[in-house]
Image (cartoon, rainbow, N blue to C red; front, side, top):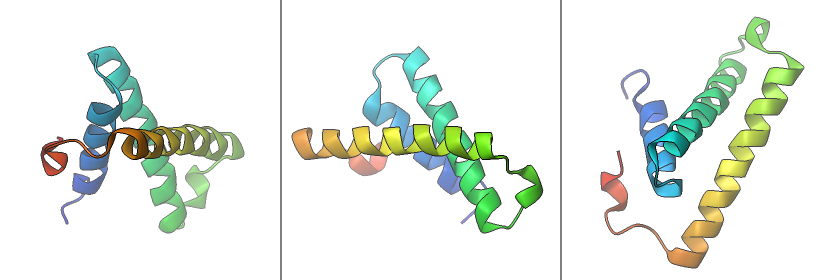
Length: 86
């Protein structure tokens, strides 16, 4: 898959699924981006970029978004056009 395509799709889908206003969507996109960047640095062994604080903040917000997404999916089900959320 093209560089950044997975990350971009994940950011967009999470933001559109969890938020209705643009300000909140942008905050979610930014949180997902930070989480995904830390994940990528860990996977690609770029330890020089990692700090304990950066990891903690990214994972705290990332797990919060994952939890909210799961609860929304369980209570409301997936959106009608799940694959079209971009």
